Length: 475
Image (spheres, one colour):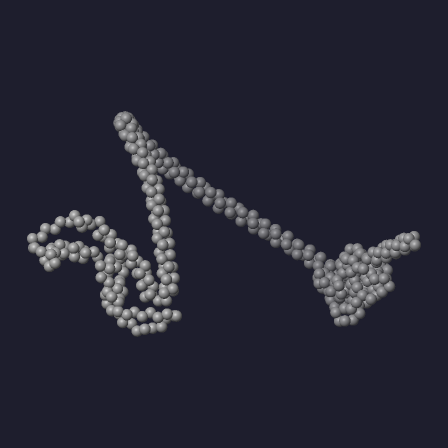
């Protein structure tokens, strides 16, 4: 079983290889000197009609098997000799026009299709004969529309007319006119030869006339040359004399200028010598002055080095020591300030905590009492022992038994001296009453603690009754 599978695989691979080789052979490349013509089923053109062939120049194409095939058109130029004889011109004069035409298959897109349709499969000789027939007809047509003089004299116009007519007809079969070369033009009546003789005679006569005119011009030119020579010689002599005079004047002026320049140079030399002497004396005096100034500066520098430099060093040392002490003082002051700041900050935090706790306690007391008035009464009741203790402390250390009162007023009622009684009552009156004590503390006693009677209607509270009757004033 394995052998059959292996054989099948080998056959399949061989078949695929043959298929690939066959497909590669169907891919055709077009050389530069040929036109590849693919015919068969090649698609449609712009007018939606089936094309007869597809022409490719300078490329490649894949030729589908069965439905397509290919062939090549040779682009090698064809040289065709055209010996046109007895062609009638516009003047009804028969002329011979021997010429040579070079044609070839065109590579323009539309004209290549014409070549594929009309020249594919033809040999080079057949194509040459077909082009020769077309050229003969068009050449006769062009000769019939022109005069012999025009054909003979204006060759460019003749060749342009031939090229235009011939190329238009060659394009219809897919050919292109490359070159036209007319070798000679003759006629059987000798008209062109007579024109040539006439032209030659005219040329000879023109040449003789030109020679005579040149001889005449030569004689006149020679006489003019002699005249110009004499005029120019006289002018040259006058110019020479004038030049000699101008030269003498120039020499005299030059000598005067020379003497003047020599005098000016002598004057400048004497002045320069005197100026140089004065400048030398000035520079000597300036040198002496500079030397004295340098010596004074050196003495001054010596004095400064001996006195000012040590003083400056001591001053800088004192300033450095003072700066160090100031820095040390600043560091110590900064440390003390930081310590004080930290202490004050800690005290502030403590006071803040105390006041915060007091505020929280007062808030809780206010919630427990139900209203602010009862909360204040509870706070006052809580502080009464401390207030009474404070008043007692005021007279605690007084030694009453050691107080001696001299009274010359006598005894009063009940055998008591009025002076002693007044003294004790004044001393007790010296103790601050509750109201003033509260005012000193920044608080205000309620009216019912000031000895006033407060009548308040009965009101219901949450689960209890609070009836405030006449309250005895606190003495």
